[in-house]
Length: 456
Ligand SMILES: Cc1ncc(COP(=O)(O)O)c(C=O)c1O
Image (tube, rainbow, N blue to C red; front, side):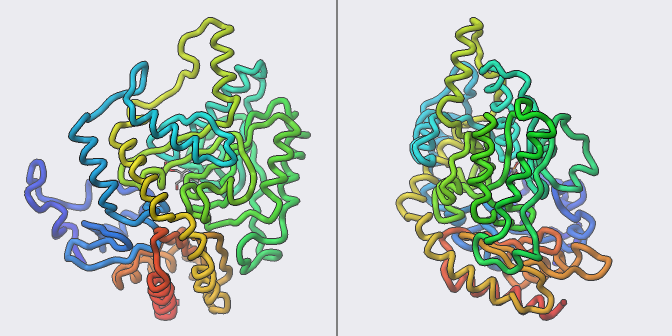
């Protein structure tokens, strides 16, 4: 283990100024900083299913980095594409001028989007930006359609939609709601997770479709004509892989249609093969109006995100600007949206997904993951296990009065044994790269079991 003044490898070669390397100045995001800095966990290289520590040890990645390295690490085709793009053109904006790769990528994404229903892509640099962009598109769409009073946004308890103000407002994470301010005109559906009816579900729970009917209650409360959009993760990822009950998403779609409300699927995690299909929308057979993407879009090799828009949305904004005599139809965008390196990475990533048929591979491997995680069903330290596609969660019974500490201890010990496991509080979340073999999944679950038995 390294102390703060002894961080091998991270500054080798002198760096920019060859300053002594300490851990303190970096304020790490979503991290128990005080604990990390006593016993840092560092990686310095990666390949396929593994990271490499600065000392050269292998760490098996059960999390695809952070739900994002779907094709496995350091894929040569993607790396080469990025290198070539960087050598050709460092940067081009997309404000009033642009570059060919951005159009090529938009073409490909809309072509692969579910049910042939999406005809435009808007580029961002992260999931959080995709979410805030989608919310803005929804508001702008209704205004363009002559319904400017539709300004209310509906999210869901236990939803995670990134960290920007739009995303935390529609999200349902209590720490965000406690710490930061929120947008007005937001309300929330109840989450769909109920242990009394769904404990240890394999795949979609049978119980809970009726929870979508709460949207009717919100319509009755606020007036449906004031609601712009409903945003949900088809499978809530960050709050512990909450799989939608059978029929739930279909019901949400029906109620949105009835009241002219746009339905947004936040597919930042579920996009690009996680459920064994291109998008969760395809897996569930439900077509939303907007889809937010990021993470796996570029195999995480360069930050990128996108919003896919259903036919008619872009056209409504164009028609309105035409009527009003405006120039810029949508007053929104990011300096780095559609960055040439990100587009190169994404185009190469889509080729890898296709050539290796990785989404079908995920579908084929999903039953193996299911079998291995549900072997924890009768573990005395486990209160629930859930899974769908190549995502799964195992809830641990927390140490009394110390929420999250058992989870951190498990993460730390597994890392030292060479397995990266993600813990959200006391919930183990598994989301391996889609190239995972059975033996990788067996090593991951065996290491978790051994470690849990040591500490719990
Ligand atoms: C569903 C969902 N939306 C949005 C985000 C935010 O993405 P980012 O961290 O790239 O801003 C995440 C991140 O995990 C996510 O899972």
